[in-house]
Structures are given as structure tokens and as C-alpha cells.
Image 1 (cartoon, rainbow, N blue to C red):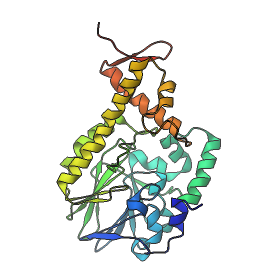
Image 2 (tube, rainbow, N blue to C red; image 1 turned 180 degrees about the horizontal axis):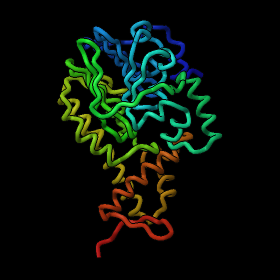
Image 3 (cartoon, rainbow, N blue to C red; image 1 turned 45 degrees about the vertical axis):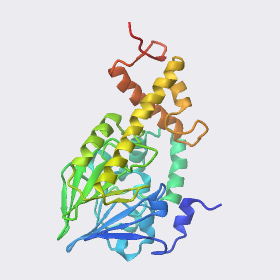
Image 4 (cartoon, helix red, strand yellow; image 1 turned 45 degrees about the horizontal axis):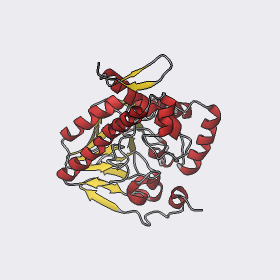
Length: 316
């Protein structure tokens, strides 16, 4: 049976790869508008340096326009954003300091994701090597918020906007005003903050800050692709952010039925359908729900007893 991954691996360079240009910036669209496991590739043609932002699966099928990249700036580190790094072994790779260990080694990536089992780690590694051409970059270099890369006639500027990962950053190309917003992907699924290094609090702050960037075009890693109308971008951003509060509402509804432990709440699901089973689902649900409960506890909405049962706080 063909999967999105195998379909992508069988695709020839340039065949079916759509492209949009904004001055020196080109956006190459992955399968189904960059839907995971693929993504959308952003390339910048500076007079002095050609740069790539992240390297999704589609980067393997673009051809010389990608393969001649002399610099890679990563907005964040996950397996689907590293799928083309093996094609650029001599290009410097820059990653925000907080995501740097995840880029440099397999144990670092596992730790960032929160995968504890060594046996499961081996299984995931084999899958990533097969489906994402995974290869770590021990030579990757760290950058900080506000870092700039001068490319000649264009520059890339980094804005640290964590939440999805600890180092997640938005990369703005100037003077074109093209913002690569990465996995703030404005999908109907909503924000994902289920890794060990993720943060619900940081994601909320990032979503409030994002509209302040001096951008004219917004490019997502997945799903939506390219926004050129600010009104539409802001509308979809608001709907994306609203998913967070919908999850809190789901937890209130579950706790209104009866007190529940974290494990019981995770089994009920707030991210995925109840019957959805994948190796990451239980841990993703647990980490996501735990952050919501901590937030609700701080706001006085819930309480937890010595046996670990959470319940809504009643008015006295």
C-alpha cells in the first residue's frame, strides 16, 4: 500500500512541485500543501548566499534550486523538518540554542520529544531513517533571538517564538517581509505543545505576539501554505488559538461528569479521537492535558487530591 512517505520518495525532481516567488524568496509546496509528513520549503536567493529554511521531504525532489543551498536556518527541530539535511552535508546548519541538542544527535531529539523507551527509540529511528531520510547534524550551530543572516540583498531575521518546541522561531526574510512561521501552521487541529520541551504558556504568548511582526506574507510549514492577506491570516490565527480554550472546555466537561486522574483524562482524549492509536498518542495526550490542568489549577478552577483525582473546584 502506498503511503504519503513512499509516494513522496518516488516523486521525481520538479514533478508536481508547485512554487510561488516573492522577490528573492521561493516557496515550494510539499504534498497536499505540506501536510505532515511533508512540509513546505522556503528558499532565499541572496546575492552572496543561497539559504534554505528547514528541509522537509519535498526538498529531496526540488533539484538544483535546493541542492545548491549554502546555508540552512532551522525554525525548529523535528524529524519532518530535517528530511533534506542529508543532501547538504557541507552547508552550515543554524538552530535556536534551545533546540540545538535535538538537531545534533538522536538521543537529543528523543529527549526533546519525550520518548523514554530505548526499544521504542530504536523503532522510531528506523522509521525516521526510512521515511524522513533522517540524519543528525552534530555540526549544527546555535543562534539566539534576534539573530540575523546577511545573504546579499536579503537577510533572515530570527524571532524566538517558543511553545511548539523550546526553540521554535519565526524566520523573517527582509526586505520582502516573508515570515516563515513554521509549525504555527494554523491548521484545524490547533497548536501542538505535547513534546517534553513544549509549553502551553509559551505558545499562548507566541500567538499574541505573532501579529506584531512586520510581515506582508506568512508561510506555514504545513496545511495552509501561504497567506498574502493580513485579514485572512488574522482570522485563521484566531481560530487556531481558540483550539487551546476548546481543549480546556473539554476538560471541564469531563471533570463535571466525575473526578478523574490524569491517566483517565488522557484516555478520554482532548487532541485525538478516542479510537486513534499511534505510538505517540498516549504521551502527547498526557503532556498536553497536564499543562492545561496546571493552568486551571493556578487559576483556581480545579483541585487535585492526594490520590491524584482532579475535580472542578466548587464555590463555597
